[in-house]
Image 1 (cartoon, rainbow, N blue to C red):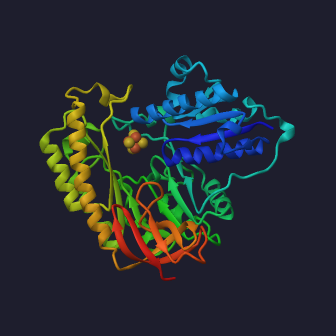
Image 2 (cartoon, helix red, strand yellow):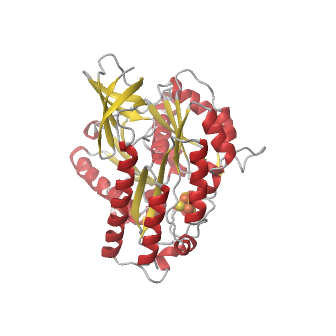
Image 3 (cartoon, rainbow, N blue to C red):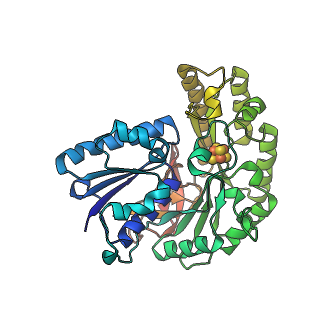
Length: 423
Ligand code: SF4
């Protein structure tokens, strides 16, 4: 049977899509391999969210063109970039054999040579942590964003599908489920009967082994008292909230076609800290938006000093073709964007480092992910996968990947921490 090398780029939602794609391939009787030279097909799940991600996808495809030149494998692009620029990709990369958006990826097993008779039941292996998709698409139309154009209107997955997938992931070895979607906080508002994120969290099964639930991508106005009460009352839900605000200056927030300003965000963060005094908070920010002035940057910096986020992803505005913001006047030149991003990133890192230093000499609950002799690597409850740093721990002798541990923090280095296992 054909063997497939499947490579995933981009965000956690793409990781979820690749897991589903991998399961479809296995179910259709194909095999997965980690070695591109050993494969019959090279499949890249691309990202086209912003120009830099698209460039990375194209570079990856070009590297695999070299592999194809050696081994004659079929080269396949799926995912956001294939969806957004499929025709252009096919022209620019004649070596590409198949180029389909994820909405058509269910055809891929057949296109790669699977036959009905080879179908088998199989699962892609999951590690101690797995992403679980709650929603897809978005109705908001932030002026810089390509997602509504690529993924269509907001849709919640049926609660029963999410429950079934949660059970399967935990039975497959996941100890942490990271709940993702373009708008997790709006979960359920389009279902009949309608529900909400708090309702979903309460309905997730108490599957043996599941110890952490973590929610990413919440809009600040969805972080309401009902949700905070639910997080505070359920020990499985990490006291960790990811609330991307993108900017704090009212003029820029308005030009982004978003809601809110620094005052409203700070009121909501106060309420979070009232319910969850130890909460770890993440946000993401875009600087260099068209028309942004030095005063707007000062306003953003003042907001960050008051908000005290534990983590902030700082991105330079990227004018994406087809978005309203790409056509706005007063675009900021590249050097100014870089300088502003550096300035805001430095401040966010100072604040984040100070927050992490407060964890020194304290015991924190963590999830072991890799163990090598007496040394282990994992994450504390306040560290989301891939973005927030790691915990390195000594005394891992009897520990296994997927075990929960208590670590006394002895050192903080950037966003990583080191400690000793105490239980
Ligand atoms: S809410 Fe998020 S996904 Fe939706 S348009 Fe805005 S940035 Fe894009």
